[in-house]
Amino acid sequence: MRQTVQELIERYQNNLFATAFNVCKNAQDAEDVVQDTFIQYHASKKEFESEQHIRAWLLRVVINKAKNVNRTFWKQNKVSLEDYMETLSFETPESENLFETVMKLPEKYRIVIHLFYYEDYSVQEIASILQITQSNVKVRLSRGRQLLKESLKEEWEDDK
Image 1 (tube, rainbow, N blue to C red):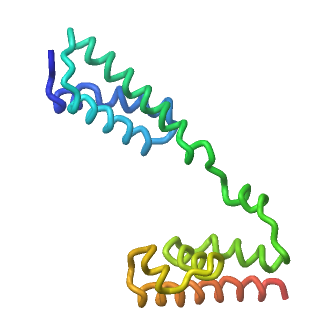
Image 2 (image 1 turned 90 degrees about the vertical axis):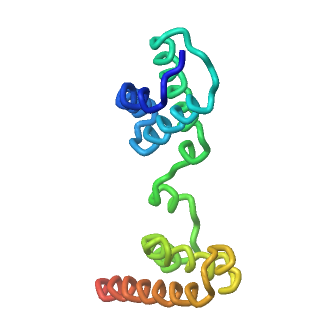
């Protein structure tokens, strides 16, 4: 017995999502797991005995996939910025403050600032890594520096 993926989605999507969410504790991961489960069903050529057999198979697959998501390196090693900061050592309090400020920048500026100043990559190398133009790297560096200057200036004025 085989049913179309569309029929199964309409019938079981919400139940599978709830099951995956209970394991993953994250809506985006649960959505991915459910989608992967339906893809696996579509790709398999397995014949099922009954609709209950299909449902049991879908539930077993969604649970296993959700458990696999929880075992990934990224899930197991996720650390908050504050916890990560405690593991780093800085030569001066100013260095630590600067690093914290850099980490609070929007991602597109934070990445180029980090690659340029902390990893010592050239503009050309950063452009190649990020697959953007050199002029775009220069613009992001400039804007990132400006945001850093404004943030640090506010902190310095608060200290006075």
